[in-house]
Length: 300
Image 1 (cartoon, rainbow, N blue to C red):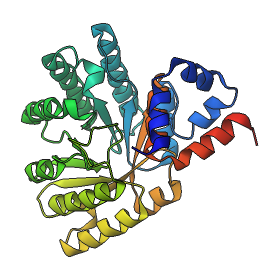
Image 2: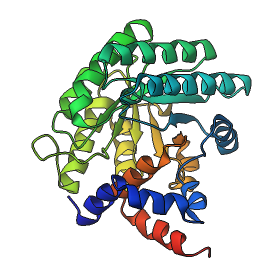
Image 3: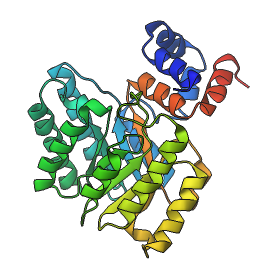
Image 4: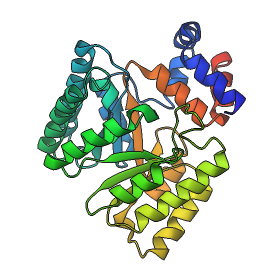
C-alpha cells in the first residue's frame, strides 16, 4: 500500500486525530467540499443547488447496535420524504451501506431494514443502490441484493475493480435491467483478494467496463480518472451503447466542471459521521491531502 495511504487509513482509526480535525476552526469549511452537511435539510439543499442527478448517502457504517441501525433507517425515510416533497425524487436516488442497517448483527436484519428503505424509495418515485464495503461483506451484500431485487428489480449493485473476483461478478450481474456501479475501491484489502498495484487496478477496471458494456444491464461508472473516462466513451462507441444506456458517477466536490460536462450522477454524502468518509476519500486520492492540510492551517 502507498505509505501515505497507509498513514491516512491509520489516522481514520485514531481518536486523537479525529478530535483535532473535528475541532480545528477551519475544518468544517474544508469538509463541506466533500460532505454536503449533517442534516436532511443540508442534503436536500445540495441536491437542489447542484442541478445534476445524485445519489445520497447518509454516513455511517459498521453498526453493532440495533438502535443505531434503526436511526439510520429513519434518516433515509426522512430524506426520501423530503426529496419527494421538494420535487427532487426524480433525479435523486439513495445509496445504502448494509453495515449501517445491521449487517454485522444479522444479515436478515439488514435485509429487513434495506427493504423498508426500498419500499419508501418506490413510493417516492426513486430507487436504492447498495454500497459495497470491504471484501468480507461482499457475498452477504450480493445475497441481500438478490433478495431485494425479487421485489425491487431496480436496486443497484456496487462492484469494486480492485478485487480479483470482480470481473466474474460483473459478468454475472450484467443482465437486463441490472444497475451496476463500478468503482475502483477504497478499503485496505490484502493482496490475496485484491490488486495492490494501481496499474493492475486500472487494467481490471477496463476489463470490467468491457464486461458491463457488452451485457444487457445499466452500467454506472464511478471514476474521476480522465484516462478511464476516455476509455469508457470509446468502449461505449465500440459496443454501440447510446448515451442514455449508461452513466458516469463522481464524488461531491471533486472535478465539478467535469461533472457538468458529463452530466454525471454525483455521490452526495451527508450526516454526522463524516470523519471516516473523509479519511477514505483522502486515502483513495492522496492528492487531496495537500488541499486539506493547507486548509487546516490557513484561512487563505
